[in-house]
Image 1 (cartoon, rainbow, N blue to C red):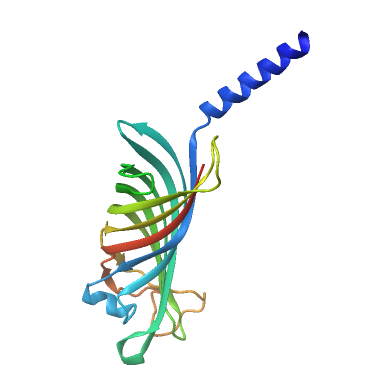
Image 2 (image 1 turned 90 degrees about the vertical axis):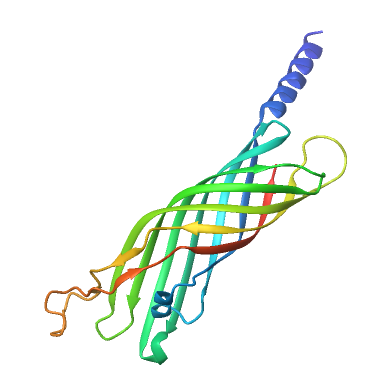
Length: 219
């Protein structure tokens, strides 16, 4: 009798734990931002900045849909000889973002969504010359995207099984202009042409259209 009671209590506890366990997801994928400002030609002759995006989120049921609250990290770099090959430049963008994504399951395998996010970005610009001038500037960023998720259930049968989710989306990232007004040599030895150790390159717009392709594991 005692053994049966413990087995029953264990089964109830396992069932309750499984029901209370929140939905979690981990994602990784490719993201690209498109810059249309003429000032971007200082950095790269290509208007696209490729980036890697990784993140994690949890879900809450809201009405007939779901709200995914997530935290993500994005990083991307560009290196090119701009201005007819006379100036070699490097740009490195890193950012963290807190986002809210509302998805509506139209079908079991089709979930359109809308996402808004706010974050903080760090941009490092370097002129690769003998003096190697560089500066890192940080600023707030906001984004809005529309897209679709295609969840595929992994495995057969009942119970709680994970989903592989394919995500395609696009939207716009809004950032204030980044002021690279104190470009300084990386080396402590300052060349004679830079007596005060700083060069003003002015403003670099960093807003633009963005699109992404992600793969997530949701369980």
